Image 1 (cartoon, rainbow, N blue to C red):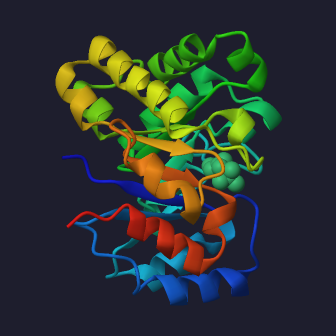
Image 2 (cartoon, rainbow, N blue to C red; image 1 turned 45 degrees about the vertical axis):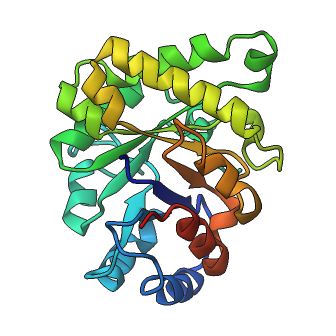
Image 3 (cartoon, helix red, strand yellow; image 1 turned 180 degrees about the vertical axis):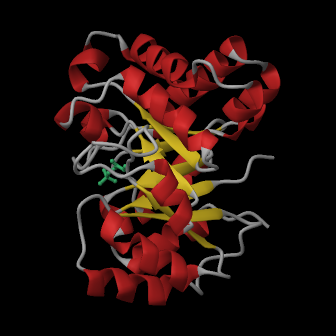
Amino acid sequence: MRKQVIAGNWKMNKTHREAEDFIQTAKNEVPSADQVESIVVAPFPFLQKLVEETEGTSLKIGAQNMHFEENGAFTGEVSPVMLKELGVSHVVLGHSERREIFKETDEDVNKKVHAAFKHGLTPIICVGESLEQREASETMDVVEGQVKKALEGLTNEQCAETIIAYEPIWAIGTGRTATSEQANEVCTHIRKVVSEYVNADAADAVRIQYGGSVKPANVDELLSQSDIDGALVGGASLEADSFLKLVEAGKHE
Ligand SMILES: O=C(CO)COP(=O)(O)O
């Protein structure tokens, strides 16, 4: 049975003080790591402090992006080596906001995924279609292309360890959640793509999250779907109480 993984993506939000207050509330309240995997994906300036404060707890800390190179003349960028040194466990890669606003390509995402594995970071790879693509019935093709390109050149074991987040762009921050059937349909397709592109074992092991207006009121139904193994949550992860409810929903005994 795949363990659910609930990640709160804070995006570019919170002051240092707010981040601190959240972690103090949440760090001892999250269920144990063998029941559910819980991750706070925080802005770079907070990472070191949050990693220190959550040491020995079940709450893990992830980054929202990174460069694929280890070092060099890349002003403003952060490397996988730096994240690893801080003790970060996960890194979100290819979020639609990075793809759309910062023009990241599938090729960039693939290089970043390789860099993550090289440095012992677990990638959370985001894929998902725009409203225009959904209306043109291109969802499955778009997502399939993104998944294959992101996984290109990885070992079968690395593919199995990857977390894929299906986040339809039209559902992000809009309050318009995909129905659990719509979300599951695409997650099932992603698992099929992994099965054909990698192998059945990797497809069985890979965890596929849904993201896009997930909140305590709709999380149970989403997580009860056959191919949804967790959630990547923006807005509803900003308050500790709400984040804890989401994590609780992912718990199994
Ligand atoms: O983009 C998201 C998480 O990465 C989803 O954001 P919302 O939960 O705010 O819709």
